[in-house]
Figure 1 (spheres, rainbow, N blue to C red):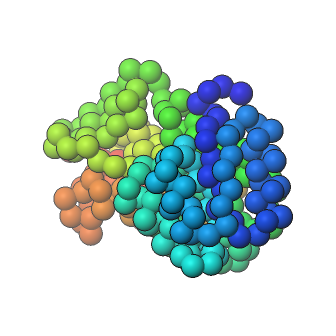
Figure 2 (cartoon, rainbow, N blue to C red):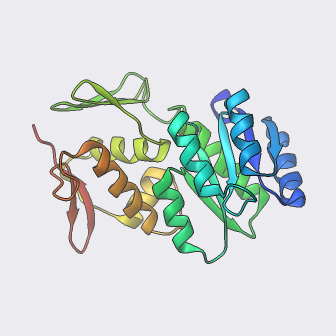
Figure 3 (cartoon, one colour):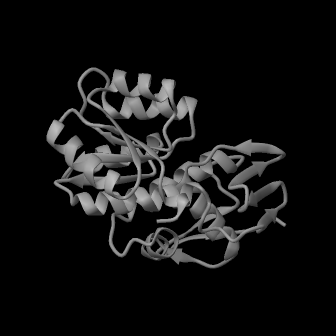
Length: 232
């Protein structure tokens, strides 16, 4: 496995069986793994040594997973993969809005989770972006090599999935894509909840549009999906 796909993973789950199985699969893939059982311990562990990625259960004693996600996002741009119970769509969407990069529903395949971790790490480190590519639209610049976005000269903090979505749309200006297209072409999901795309588009608009309620760059194409409209 290439270095962009391995790292230090913090697993936060109060079920010792789940934590043990997840850690075994991640260790097998070459990751360094630290397991904690509650939100307070997760925040302490991240403070002592920030991880490269967090696998975070939503249902935790003390501080729940959503609050842990919020607090982590306030301090570090660490990628987060959330674990949610099957059928809790509202929680999944709130998790994505809070800043999670991906989610896996319980019961889940440990192998699938390990693959998601690998994918999120690779994308977070920009391994899929062409080296040296810079995309510019007026005061908005995406530097693929540095995995950095700037708006009006100021750096914009994006999750790995937000970055991938913005870069993809800017590489294909004025081309409309369905939500299913974006799931497959941007994140490589052959199946998934299309509302994931809706959440990420909303978050991107909040970060790069002057007025997110009247976007000028990321436009909704009614009956289809979304397209990027350059301002220049």
